[in-house]
Length: 564
Image (cartoon, rainbow, N blue to C red; front, side):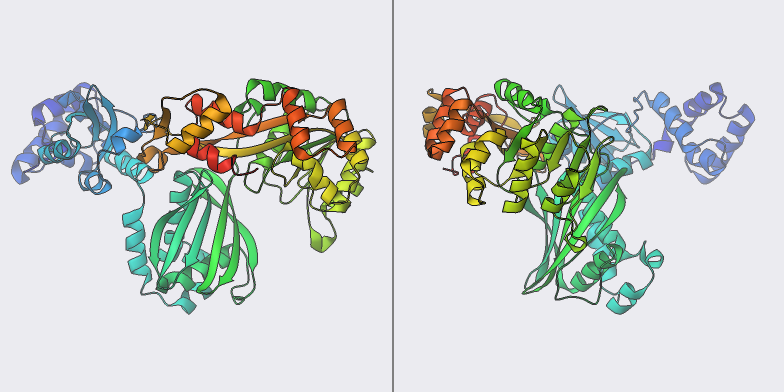
């Protein structure tokens, strides 16, 4: 039978507490007499009588047993250790795997004398256990933080099953803030933030609710909920996002804020009626977002130098192109961050403003108020701007206004949908812009994609598939024996990837390219000339990152080699 942590040798524990002047000799003697009478642990008695605090007791117990005491606010559990112990076992014994050192599992315990916990952990992990101590509440909090909330959500769903929809959704917010319904949603959001998700999709199916999270750009199903709670969850989201609960057939959008895992998160909510009912999409935006520097996005040294040179241009149009979800906004924000200076007047028109800058005048598109990208651009020209940032060029009017601004002495940054640098010119032509205006205003184009990074905690060498080897050889002119592949762990949510990195190609619009454009050259001819002038194509940039172990061939192939 497992002994309590308070069952350590009473005399030794008591002496430590007396020596440290946490209790008096008289208090110790009285507690020992009471211990002999009812058989409880000395520590339990001292805490109950409020003679020592739980923290005092855990410190003294650590000294008594010779087991190190750690602070879980400063020590981060390693993914490879977490992966060894199932959540159920961690919660059963209130233990937390911390690290693997010399084939020993460092295990955080509140009760280092629990022989059953030792035996079960050694059987499951197949490693010798090396104990360290922490306060019981700190261990529980760390378990919640490092394991998913599956058990909690299941319990809340069971309690929620007995709640009637009308009563739930019509009560004031403050009365249902701590209801099972609110806790289910909070746990789903908390789990998504912990997993680094950017979006949560709550989708009704024929017989269940499917919850999916977008992690590093890829959707993963993370949970299945009973269909019976669907009206409750959707109504709750509409309520906190200040949407109309009664409207179910028309799409709506709203937003709310929440504090999750100590972080302030803005959550944008959109609903849409499907065949099985309303789905909800939640976009998670961290207010504590730290703007990336350009050298953190993934530019190779040559492309980074070229792009920084373009940002120093006094006027002209600089385009960032790629499909939806390719990281264009991130690049624009990193560019604004670099350009931000007190002597510059930087104006933006965005849809929406995702993150706010100091010393930058940001505006948001509002069609209901008549503010579009084009009208915003027209208004900006009267505000003496040095740099204009347009969230996206979508139509002829916006393109014309952007080119006019560039030709009249402003640096204009914008994004646009185009597959690569050369095809960006032809996208502008499709919008009705003359080649001569394009050639005289556009100074540079950046095309990009984003791919997932290999997880450093579970990466291992792997052989290239035949088609991957073929593409690699064609692009790099060499054979690659192996590449780094993530096998999946708790640290990366078992995806094998963690974080993302950009693939870029940067074209400087030279005099030669300007003349080719006016004479009607094809995209292939313009691309060939840009490469001749030093441009590194995205496909080569991608395979260079495969060689460096940053990403995998499959990520590059699906992102780049399908664009031509």
